[in-house]
Image (cartoon, rainbow, N blue to C red; front, side, top):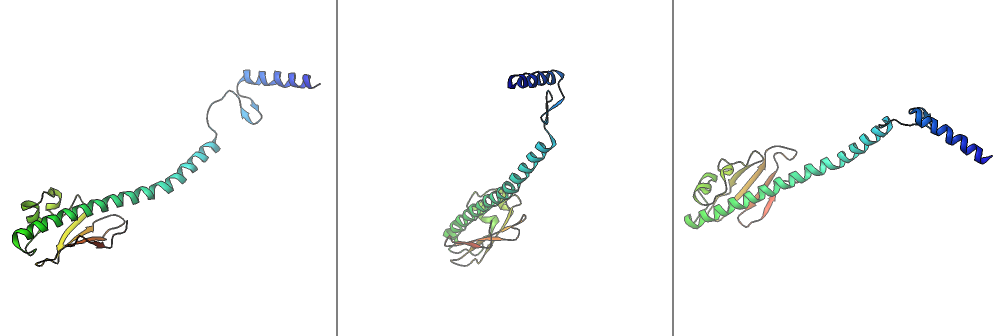
Length: 160
C-alpha cells in the first residue's frame, strides 16, 4: 500500500513539473522569481543596516574633518612661532603674513578657510601668547570651535 501511494505521488509530481506552473505544496513549479514577502524582507534588512551605518559614517567624517582642523591649527601655530622668532612677539601676525612669509600651509588657509569646512582666526596675540581658533562652518557641528594655544593645548567646544 505504501508503495502504491508513493508511485501515485511520484506520477502526480512528475506530471505537474512537466506542465510547469501548477501549484504543488504552496510553491509554483517551473517559475523563477522572488515573492513579494521575500522582497519586503530584503528591503527591511537593508533599512535596518542603513539606520546603523549612516550615522556611523557621518560621525567618522566629522572626526576626519576635526583631525584636518587640528592639523591646520598646528601648522598655523608653527608659522606663528617662526614669526615670533624673527619679531620677538606675536603681535602683528596675521594668517596672510604667516602663510606667505614663514610656512607653506597652503592656499586654502591664506584666505582664512580650508575648503568650506572651517574658518581660522588668530587671537590673544601678545609678546608670548596666542590662540588659533578653528570654527566649524556647516554641518551638524556648525559654530563649534577648536582652539590651540601657544603651549600646544587644544580646547574648544567641538564634539564629533
